[in-house]
Length: 444
Image (cartoon, rainbow, N blue to C red; front, side, top):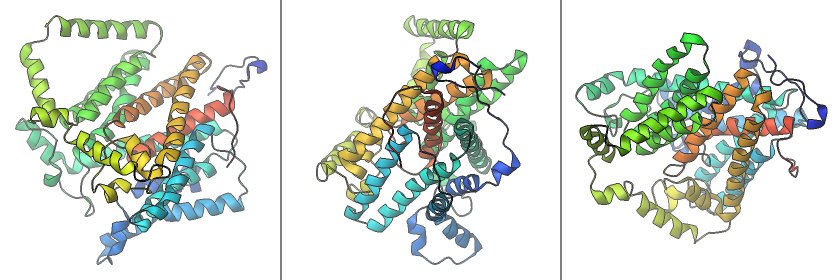
């Protein structure tokens, strides 16, 4: 269907078409297979390679640990033999530069092998996107890659919920929560379940998609999207991850700003009513106290305000950054230098690639947000499905941007990165096709 109406060529916009169905030949394309392989290596790492497998499941686990490196090698090979001419969008290239600086910094890592492994996994995603975008319609290619990732996230979540259903049901029935019950959950293929914040992150993505569909659906059928929206929203809340809950609530309000027309008026009215209820104490005090206690998770005042010890970790991380401020100490530097997860995107970037990598990473993220808002200004020229997708993409990017304050979202190979990268690629592809912003072209 048409992406945009034909308008004056002097405005720099041409009509293009996007096919919203995933076709078989696209599913078996090399880039799609490579992308699925990268997803298939989630929740593993180089430590798996340190021991010899004893059975079939362990062998499969060992092999999938090599997927990122295999994908990187084969993707680069295809780029060379195929003489790829497509350029990565400018905002995406800045994240690539961060990855290359992090790869170089691996030489300075306390464990160069492990740091290089994660650098290779990170860079493999860019290599796949490079060969994937080498097609006639870059915007359509980017949309397809996003659909593939969003479907994968939802499938992963449903698998985890299925295997953990008994434990989750027992906790919910007894008035418990999903926080801290990872040890009680079963393993899948001898791999542990994701922790509560990870499951909440998975649930937030389809939750955001469902919320937007409620407002843009046709007729009474739109209200059917309430079911998945409430289900995924409940998972986010039940997992008791404060970062995910705050991020999800922020995104709901954020998305309401871009509904347009009567939808926006209705949404703003509902927000005003809710705000008035909070200020006027119309909401029963017991409810407020219950929610407050729920989000505190039984912590002391000191634990709560330190964000479960994050402020202490941030202080230690900053001290290590000053020891190698220019290019950092490579990927996973936090695990080597402070022996724990630093729980902040920007501190992780600085520990990994120093201020050199930090600057280019932040530029790439800000550039992506600028492209989103510029695309919104032109969204009146998009067809309905594409406008909906643009708003959904912005909402998901907003969630991971907020989550990046208390977790690492974007600069490390993992679920957050595998969702964010296709989105910023899509925004960059829109810029390439519709000249959203004037910029200096830097090739790769």
